[in-house]
Image 1 (cartoon, rainbow, N blue to C red):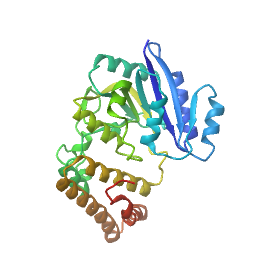
Image 2: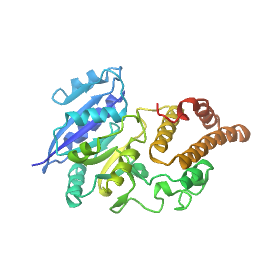
Image 3: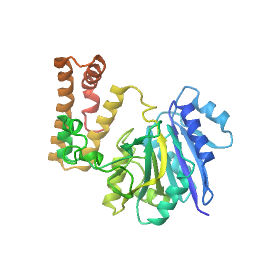
Image 4: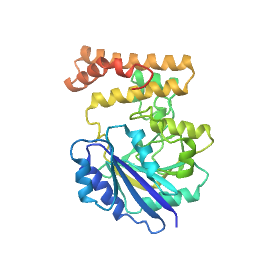
Length: 308
């Protein structure tokens, strides 16, 4: 019987992580062996002690400093003994048959590089953000000028989100977001795991890009489902946006040719500046206006192109 190593990285989300672990333990795993590896990313809020008390028989590892999401997951894989690695966010709840379903999907399509499933909001409605297409210069521009938001259902103006697909069929995708993704351990190690220059965000875009270069598909199935709350470890919106922008800037530097990468970075910066100015001119609600003002004020962090 093959084994799946489930990697969960906790950062100040002990209650959600405990709920996630509980759902994994309650799930049907009749055709596979499962090990759970939890890494506490130096939460400093008692998370490690709380999780260890609740689940003394699990492998719960305390990291001495916050090394980021990508690096912490890599440390988890270093400890894993499974044939497959299941990357699972701490703010998720696994449905009863989802581990079996994603494993069965992998066995039906064994040549792929990674297999992902459907995510739901807490109320059970579809959360479409578990997949995306790779960004292009056009999609960066459409997002920056607001066309993606204004025409969110358009394949032309909002191509990154697969807007005309209801996530109800199996298909290839560009990017699987690693809130619930299965990878064969041998493939993961051959690819070198996550690039640890990504502290948080875009590490999944990066690994999926490298899978594509290696000729490995990324596949989605609606038969494996989880609830994903989202954003629990980075609740402050402005900081979250700044971190995402920094990661995207670095991704562009790593994977695009210099000229289009420079153009895309300039467009992204112009888009942030435009949102800040629009907030002042149109007297947006105070919160969004302040968010983009703060994001712009932190451009020394996210606009530099060498990472964090």
